[in-house]
Image 1 (cartoon, rainbow, N blue to C red):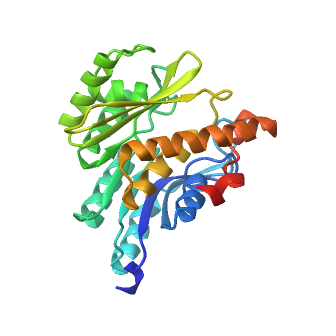
Image 2: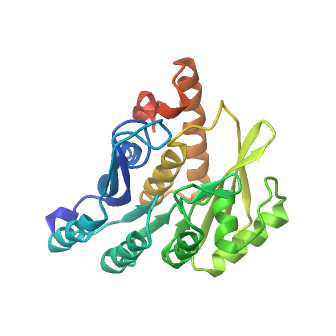
Length: 274
């Protein structure tokens, strides 16, 4: 089909009109990396939930009709990237999407957005967190933070884990299906580490100096670069270095502009360099 003459990544996530996160981040970044980004929204926000108020529309009831139109067009996706999913029904829809559109040439990147700092997000239940385990076998690359990796593997959370602890967690995740794992955003004094584990290879820690406070959308920037690099044939360790360097550079500029934490990171100023 002529529709499939260009590389494409389907991004299944929510959309926020302001605040630089989710689809609003993935769309420009993946496009700048010379891949067509095809968003499938799970919900639509005026601005993300880190603000004091926001308007919100759940897109769950429209997702299957949306997907059916893509199926009629016989679209092929070189990559599929998933982010925050708010209900068991959405998990089921995403699982069905994988079954419809996955081929042997499709790279699935799952960012199991569920919590941070040892706790689930307020909108996430224990039951829903365990249902996320049913998506993990579909992942070629899984990018949890430490909290999410612990939840998926039923591991007691500790803010600081040594290499042996991380290896044990990654081995459990690998046994669930993925071949490549990145445990992202590990606190290490004044640095942030990303722990990269690939089946059959030695684990690697990618370290970057911490720049400012945590900001919304940073994980979406990270996973979007990982997905686009994978589709473009870059190895995972190089891709994690690429994403970490880009985010650090962008964070430094964000601090120079004195942007509120809610406003995310000003990646737009560096898109031509990505």
